[in-house]
Image (cartoon, rainbow, N blue to C red; front, side):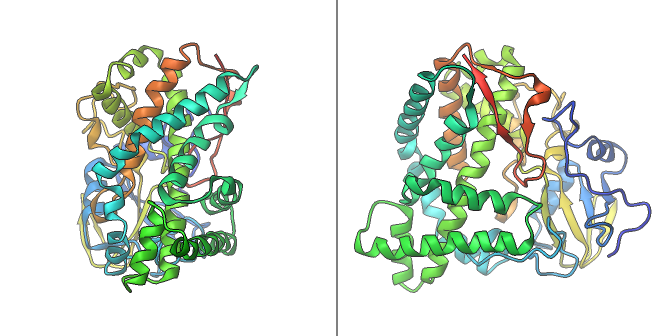
Length: 401
């Protein structure tokens, strides 16, 4: 449906004076018109914007909404966006989504992720030790928040970390909404080709890693070699991009709220609770999740018609005052923080959330134990936030200790 003159433009950016808060326009809409039309792609589309927690949860959990970006009026981030291969299964409905997701379910069971915790702790120690030997302001992103999740996902997948420059470059193209659709598709294809070589190599030299087990599933005819490669590419991309940005933004948030740090350091249970609150507060998937209605559906006081696009604003829903008391405050001891929707909800909920939680629970307390004098080396207004990427974060973060 084309936009109407009254539809406000969908705003991607955060306010400069409140870069960790959601768009002020979207926050205003949650209070005044929680399900409202917005203008997308210079007015060529007018999807619904959902901003309340209850409505967001309903849409995300309903089979009446599709993630298929090839549907007419699907509110893709990029105009003309192409759907990725089957391995990027978040853009597919069942049965493709269920088939692809099922191949990875065992990899992210809590027991298997817990077995990775010593390796995550060891990598954290190595990076902090190396960073602490440097002098002068150090880029926290370059030396810690980006390499840590990249090393972890390489360990899990069985990917050589020495190739990190290549896959980080491709990931940067994929998440940048200013990339042309063909550029993003080319980056996805490039990752797929790289992983295809690795999948085939695992047959000759198998290891205790995800790619070896995906290759085995291809041998059994469950998926193809290319599916295995694309699943690996999806994990490689998603497994470091979101967590890297969460580590950096969480560090900024804690340094701006130093009274909260003692709670974080209070032990494993308090670290786990702290991570849930940071996930709620930051919601790094800041462009929202996209759906298209397959039938007429009542959402709140609005009837969303079959074929209408919907954007679910996770960052605004996670600050809903009807669910979270004083939602714009950081409260690491918040009792209901885990009700957040930072990982989505329903059958498309983030598969890798156990890994993300484990990394954050290990990394953040250890960071502030090891570097109690950690501080940001530039004024807040000079921090370069990534406004143009689908995963919110910072380009660099100069720090001292």
